[in-house]
Image (cartoon, rainbow, N blue to C red; front, side, top):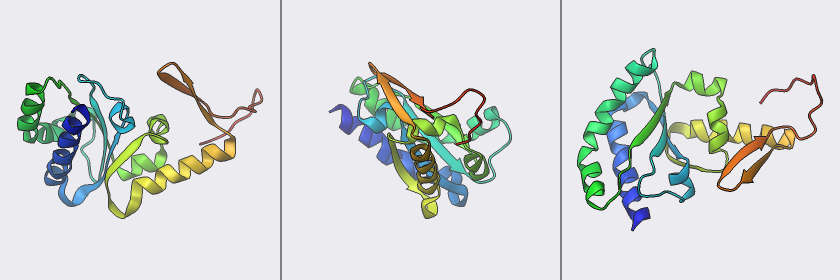
Length: 163
């Protein structure tokens, strides 16, 4: 029941995002509890949108994304009727910003659902990060239902390394 509710939202999310961003859209990726399948009725949907030519500034990007949420209002209303009080937690990045990297991408190494990915752009970026983490011997360490990364278990004080 719960999985089906979130699947309905994700199915509607893709065309809503495509309609808003058109040819600028590069990637739609869901991460966090929804990607892991451990969501609750009040879990938000963590979504990364990669699009070309995004406005400068978080608030301008957010206003542009508001159109997507407005388009999904009927789906959110249907879900609320089923007791699911989810929201979208969107992160909006340009392809250039993705190439620079972000600690956020560590959350997507093992738990991501890529819903749309033009020419495999984001999948390739994640694969490069996975390879680098393997080179470093990095490990994701769970403590209860949270985790942290030990990025370089053999780290020596003063040593500098990059992801």
